[in-house]
Length: 96
Image 1 (tube, rainbow, N blue to C red):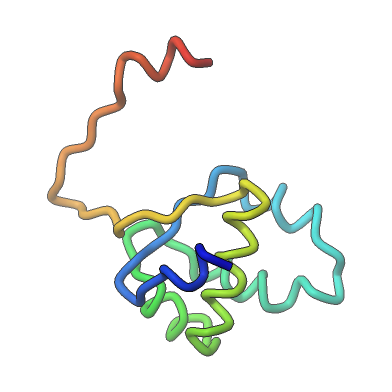
Image 2: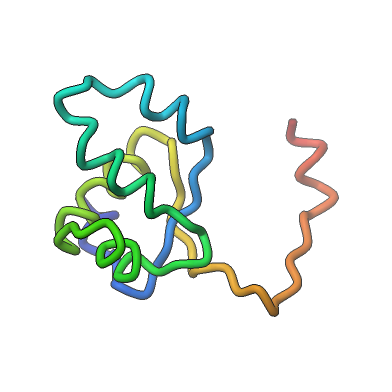
């Protein structure tokens, strides 16, 4: 619940699993909303943009993203910017 309360429209999310793997572990009856969200997913977009693109209310997007974070399938980020330079920490490979 804390993750959902702290979400803002300018946040984004980053999937930690392949989208097809994510859809395989969800019952078909509840997959419609998730499918809409995954189809509009882009780490360069904000939650508000994905909400608009998926034609879903922002509150529903918050709920779905909150569930994905809880299930360790996604993490909350600031949307990636094409003009920024990102570096992976050399320590991160030691953790694997």
